[in-house]
Image (tube, rainbow, N blue to C red):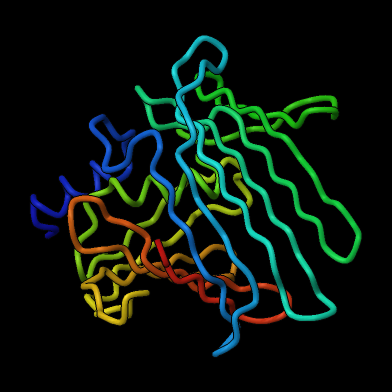
Length: 227
């Protein structure tokens, strides 16, 4: 039998989050990207402002990344608008420039009708009732009551073909910081369709993403928080 406390935790994780959140407008996180021991670029993640998106108040999250090894330069830009009352994605823009080629998409999510569409393309597609894009999902995990040793399954990525997204809290670890010290963190493994990434969240109320390991075409890149 599953303990009642665990059932309550699962219910909280699977439902929409409620304010207050552990982040606010103006929060800016800057990272150094490393491929092994070598610096290969920088990235930043910012809570830029509150906006109105189709009549609803929403956070605007922006991620920008620049770098890559010689001969494989990449720029990556994500903008996510997420409702503040119900933590659901409402609009998501992704722009990837690699090798002189640009791949750009903007998606509109309508949680009430469980649909999403892509700007410039006719028709729409089925989405889960509480959709999240990849950037919104990172902020969602910052607020979720994750417990060490627990695994969770989410059917919330806005493109259903990538669900379920698995999240396992593998333990607590000390992660090196830019100042030469260490910071206690929760180590979290995220998996979807055979792809995985790791995130180390600070073990405190802010739940900052102190370090991330991301699979990219040229290898596994580590993003380390520097300020």
